[in-house]
Every structure is written in structure tokens, then in C-alpha cells.
Length: 151
Image (cartoon, rainbow, N blue to C red; front, side):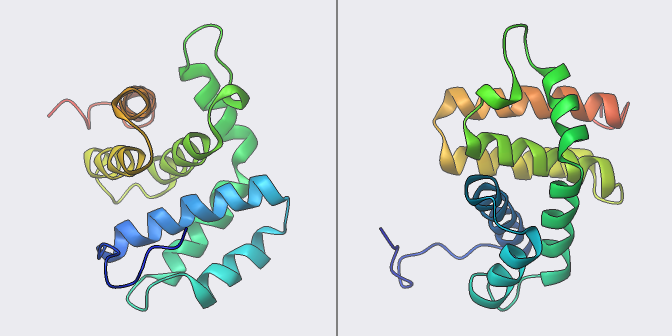
């Protein structure tokens, strides 16, 4: 069901880019379509005019290219008995994109990125899954950027 433009919430540009990136990653995984093709469709038709298309493309293409490494890192952060493939596909896309950004956009504060991706998880899931995303991303952020979350 489409949300009418007049009732759709206005997102800040960075939040809109991250949401679109997660949606694109979900679509890529579900459809198996080409990463570049999906990215261009989103840029042409789904990103708001004020969104940073370069950031969007970097997140989508970078996350997709790094997926095997990201999945290994996420898998290591999960509790015993859990695998990345067992996760909900939307949650998987959020964790992958969040981890990619934590790893590759080091000029952004870790706390800020963590908060953005936990908020994004909260827009899709109830408290339990949102807390799960927070715990996994927090653990990964502490490994990738030691000391940045202690302040």
C-alpha cells in the first residue's frame, strides 16, 4: 500500500538516503537484480530531491560489494545458534548497511551512525528487533572503533 505524499513523514536528507539504501539492498537481495540497475532506479525515481545521491550510491554499491565480509562480521557478533541468513531480510539489510557505514565512513561519529541505524530498525520493527539491531551494531562498533562509544 502506497503512503500518500501528503501524510508521508519528511525525513532529513541523511535519514532518507539511509532508508533508501536499506530498501535498495533489500530489493537487490530479493530480486537478484544488478546492483547498479537498482541504484540508478532509486536515484531516478525514489530519492528525494534534496538527498545525497553520491552517498546513496556509495552505501548501496559498497555494501553490496562487501557483503561476504560484512556477513562474516555480523555472524561473529550474533549469539550462538544464529546465522545471518536466519535474520529477517530487512534487518539483514539494516545491519549490513550500518556496518558498512561504520567501517568505511569513519568521519561520521560512531554514536551518530549507531543511533541512525537503530532508529531505522525502529521504523520497521517492534522493540525486540530494534534492541537486537542495537546490540549487534553496538558490539560491531566497539570492535571497529574502539573507545568511540565509551564517551
